[in-house]
Length: 323
Ligand code: NAD
Ligand code: AKB
Image: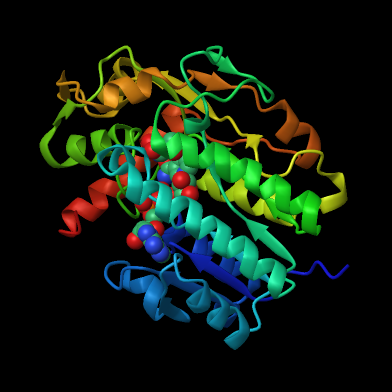
């Protein structure tokens, strides 16, 4: 079966991950061969000007299929979704976007003989009964609608692998930390906002408690994990759409101390909101031995190297008036 990656369609390309993953895909496969798309037509001007961009609603099968045919797409990276915070405020919209979007991408892929599909999952698949270190195989009992859609999405992807022989891959991303595009409404957003506020105001009011501990990953490792899995030989994969990937795990107090090492006057206080319960339902860290064994996963950053990098990038952006 033909499995090459030549022409890629990215959905949700203007989001936190898409805005950087699209650049990485263009660097690897050529600017004109990576079509960026999003429901929105605003923000991330560099991405829109550096290659093909189209507005696309993933809830519309025909719109996806038209782009696939027009550009002779052979690979789809499906990032469009509503995340946990936004999803708990509007569970019906979260179900509709995440499930109908995923179903449409999978059906377009089968109908148009797409070679490869990448659809991320999340640490949100787990619930309070998950061990503190989430095993690769363990019951999935999420308490958020976002988590429900991620569990259903994983099961649906595996169904398409078995039923149609579609090559679908996916990772359970931890909270992603980055300095390019602000996150779109998740629970782990505090671990990004803290850096922005440290640079702008030297103070952060955190929406979860200081002992809240979650799995996190810096964007360069997120890009590496995504590209490595995307390019892994299909016949080497025993799992498909549900790989655990770990990198680092820390509580908010430890994160604040890591920032204080570079900004000694930084202060933090806490006003927990509805996202505390979501964070409390997720594990502290993950066992990613399947990803290490099946496609060689190996992260590069730890809390200190990420903090140094994040602060340097955001200080420069702040001086230039960009944040
Ligand atoms: P984001 O919220 O930053 O971006 C999502 C993008 O999807 C937005 O640009 C939005 O405009 C777009 N979108 C929303 N509805 C759409 C629709 N109907 N049609 C087309 N586009 C639509 O999200 P992200 O952080 O970049 O996440 C990308 C993927 O990674 C998602 O599947 C998410 O669940 C997963 N993930 C992200 C994280 C993280 O920490 N960022 C962690 C785990 C999993
Ligand atoms: C969220 O907090 O909703 C996301 C995720 C971990 O899936 N960042």
